[in-house]
Length: 430
Ligand SMILES: *Cc1c(COP(=O)(O)O)cnc(C)c1O
Image (cartoon, rainbow, N blue to C red; front, side):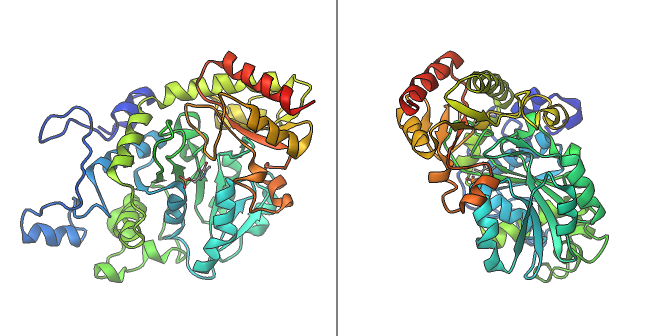
């Protein structure tokens, strides 16, 4: 079932991509724990390998359980296709891989998940790719950073860790004018709160590890394609527009039209990079996704109450939650994520770095972990953990200054969470 416009989000998060198992009638999507699939005959095998017929060959490329998740995430995002990967970071490489080549660059926001800053500022250089970091509230700076070698613009819809909201429409217009795709990491928002494709994004990437799974069990990622980009408008994207030697000169865009990026992701990306999601992980994420909207509503409700409580507390310097009227990003909530600003934000503790460390140690319900988007409330002192590879200037630019802690507000009883923060702040700030 993939009838996006016909059904509402709450229906699609349970049904999209799934149907009763054709062999057994199994109502829940089975975990197809199989590496390979038997060909009907030699002709069938040849057609599959030539990409003339769609089907299952080998689970590095496609697996029936993973395929349900791919279709579900793509449907919830309003895209035409999705490719699941082993992690969110794998999804980012899979999104860039068809676009980039040595000497080319991607223009990216300074406000990104710490691991993404490291991936883009250090690791992709080994592929000969460059990332140019820009403040995405400065539209002129984005335009100035785009040059003839730029092949994509990359940002987060709600940026981890600060909870900043990106003006996706304005940035999509800049990418459009430069004839390059906008890639949006929608991990923190999820498609329930924000649908980047409706704001002009070409590709959406996810760490399904976070809210989509929602229970902290498995890592995973997904790349969703809007199907709207014309890869053949110029010669910037030869992987999609020019003949592919490995498939007898087949041109992905000409052959697969709006599904070109998705087919390339499977037939080249997963085939050769091998960053495949396993069917067990897809199963856990499918279980989680069924309750996505219910959880996100509670995350938003709890985060709003806790952010308001912290903002009024003398032991706290400031709170970055975009759902607070005091936030410079408050106006963007209505435009970009009208159902709320997710459950992730930072706050600055009076007493700086040392007080943050004491706070983290004193909390009882909040867990000190490097994760977010769990039903459990989580806290991390980013400067001493996820962002410690960055310089202090990079930490501040990313919203992870030394005096700041990041919380991912869970779906527990909000009064218990506030009481926990209250007792721990008393110990941290004297
Ligand atoms: C966690 C995260 C990632 C990386 O995802 P993994 O599944 O940990 O590889 C990327 N972007 C954001 C916004 C994240 O929160």
